[in-house]
Image (cartoon, rainbow, N blue to C red):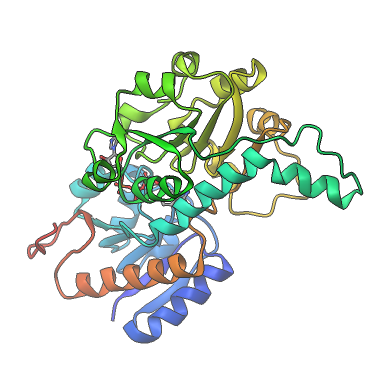
Length: 339
Ligand code: NAD
C-alpha cells in the first residue's frame, strides 16, 4: 500500500478513485486545491501525488515535493506539458501518466462540436425556447463530400477520421508520423499549407510541444479557406487566440469550436458564475454567435473517468513493486520494458 495525495480534487474525482481503489487498497488523501508552490507542502509524507492538466508541476514545486518525501508524480491525464520532466529526472522523481483512457470520448466530443457549429444547434435551442421558430441564420452544409483536415492522427485523431469517414467527408491529414489505419481508410497525408488551402473543416489533435505552439497563427489563418471551421480539443496553446479572434472578426474563420483555451488554468473546472471574468480575450470569444466553447470536458465520460482512475492506481501499484509503467521519466533501478 502506498500513500497518494490527490490534488485538484472534484467530487467526481474522489467518487471514481474511491470506487476503483477498492481493488487496489492504496491510502488516498484528497485535496481540493491545485498543486502549486503554496500547496506542495500538503503532500509531505506521501509517496506519490496525483495531478491533472492544470496543476503546475514546475521545477520549484517538484523540489518541494521531493523534499517532502514524494517519489512519484502520477498524472491522471495524457498530456504532460504542465510537468518539468527534466527537473523531475534531476530530482529523482518518477513521472507516469494515463496515455490512453478513452480516445472515443474526445473524438466524439470533437464531432459533437462540428455538428453543433454547422447546424447552429446552440442558437436553435435558444430560439425555440423563446418561441422563435425562424430558420434565418441557421443554414448549415452537408458534411458528406466536405474536405476535412486532421492535424495529428494519433489515438484521438484516427477516431475522428473514422467518424468523419462515416459521414462521407473527403479526408486530409498532417502528422509527423502518418498512421497506417488512416492511409488504409483513404485519408490523404498532405503538407499543412495544402491542408489549409483545401479543407473547410480543420481539427487539431497533435500534442502541445515547442514546434506546435501557436501552430494556428495569423499566417496560417491567412492561408485557410474563407469561412473555415476550426476545432481544437487538444491543447489551448496550439492556437494563437488573438489571431483567431481577428480571423473571426474578418470572417476568414466561419466557425470555432474549442474545448481548450491557452489561459484555461485560471478559468476551467470551477464554478465562476458569480464572478466577473477578468480575461478580456476569453470574454471576447464568448461574444461570437459562431463560437462554441466547452470547458475541457471532451474527456468527460463515465468510461474515460473509470479508466483514468484504474490506470492511475495500477501505475501506483506497479511503482510499489519497484517498476514503472506508462512512464515519462523513471528514477527506479528496475524499469519495465516501456520505460
Ligand atoms: P497521440 O500521442 O496518440 O497522438 C498525437 C499525434 O500527434 C501523433 O500521431 C503524433 O505523431 C502527432 N504529432 C506529434 N507532433 C506533431 C507535430 N509537430 N505536428 C503534427 N502532428 C504531430 O495523442 P492522443 O491521445 O491522440 O491525444 C492528442 C491530444 O489530445 C493530446 O495532446 C492531448 O493533449 C489532447 N487531449 C485532450 C483531451 C480533452 O479532454 N480535451 C483529452 C485527452 C487528450
